Length: 269
Image (cartoon, rainbow, N blue to C red; front, side, top):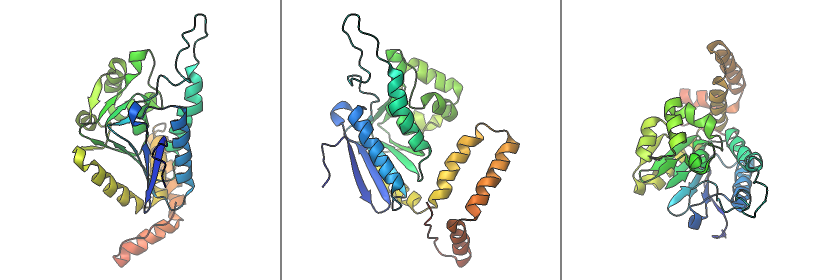
């Protein structure tokens, strides 16, 4: 039976694993326990061949409010003469491994943003492959309000999604960006009516779970790699990826199903 007090709740429905950030009293902000639990659940899903799509969402009225500033890992020591807290250690130990885990994940990851996504919580969502958001949701690069810069990959992700001009304004001003504006800017894929978020997420996750997982993960990696290439290098990279995928079961299955006019049954991962 699931522990409703656990910092991350995990639920399997067929080939879809849903991970729910579960600190609603703190808008699901990160502390050490939630970092540990999310990392553990993501690694377990990555290692489980039965999982073909992962959904990350939040309990209560928020998705994730970022780092819990009362967490000893980041809270300043107010004792006179106490040395400042080295927040860089938190980034290296927690947020960098989380972002890289998602970057190399073997199956698609959906962020179902059900409420506020602020600071590292906003960038957690942007690290996912597809972001669906309720219309009442919002995204806030809140770092400048406490004298910091975007982390959890925000400096890399945001300009690539919305362009430098919008990224600078969002990061410097720290203003709230509602879900409809986030969709318009290209920050997220879609926003939907609040009441439809669960059903839309389920339908999308089930669709992705039925697709060729290896090819989807390779598409993510290829997009990231192409950011640093000229056209010629990108074309060569595409050839290498297609060479590997062309030798896979899923390619044979896809072509066979196409000619047989039946639905394919993809199994590679």
